[in-house]
Image 1 (cartoon, rainbow, N blue to C red):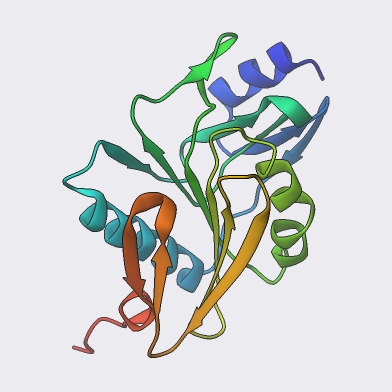
Image 2: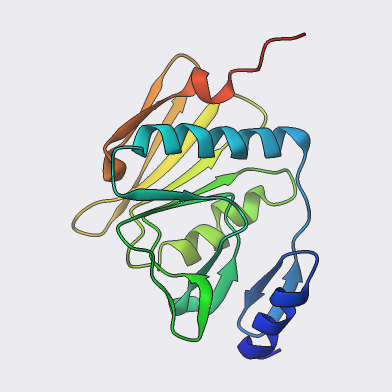
Length: 181
């Protein structure tokens, strides 16, 4: 499928599709916990970045990786400054500073491996955050000023510093359950 055909498909589709070099893959829905954690991350990031010129986007926003010809829908995207879109597609975001994926059993290997490799090719990207569904654990890949990526982890009772955004997240707050009724 050409990229133009893919864009036309996405405009009319009832489900989202990932595009990689002419191949199109349907994206499945997530679990209740996946959805809760994605919304929780969006909420906490929006709160922490409120006074900054940053925008937090949901999984409805498609991100384009020009270098590898990938279009996908991260669980959460953050852009600081003005959003930039592809010349050929005003709905494809090009300049996230941070992407977040809530790990699913079916996509964890892809999110950690091939997808992470694609994401690291986005010039503006400085942080890639993986959120576990099975335990209170955040894994942050951060690009240093001179280019290499490093991994930082935080678990229950810890805080995770996200230097590219100038914020900290409390792991316990990310995983906090609403009170039972």
